[in-house]
Length: 100
Image: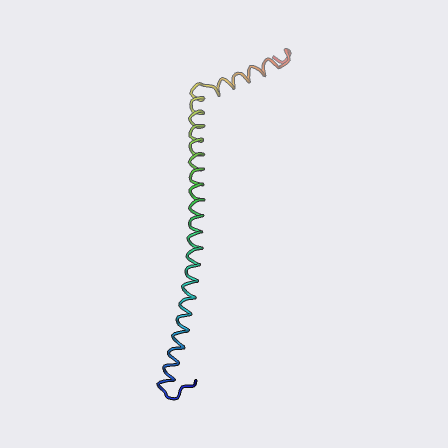
């Protein structure tokens, strides 16, 4: 039914405008909820990946420290020098007797 007075026209326009605004707000809230869910899922996944990387790095660091300690203790025993001396001795023994 068409409005017959300016007040009815104004009321109809206000009602229509209110309906459009309510729909717009509902759609906006729905999109915002979807965006928040994607954000939360992404943060969760990245947190899990970061935790896994931190754990892996800690394991590798511990392994490297162990290797460094082992290497340091081997160097303390003079093994690199002993190895060099053994190689020299083997080369000397392997040379033909005429070259000595």
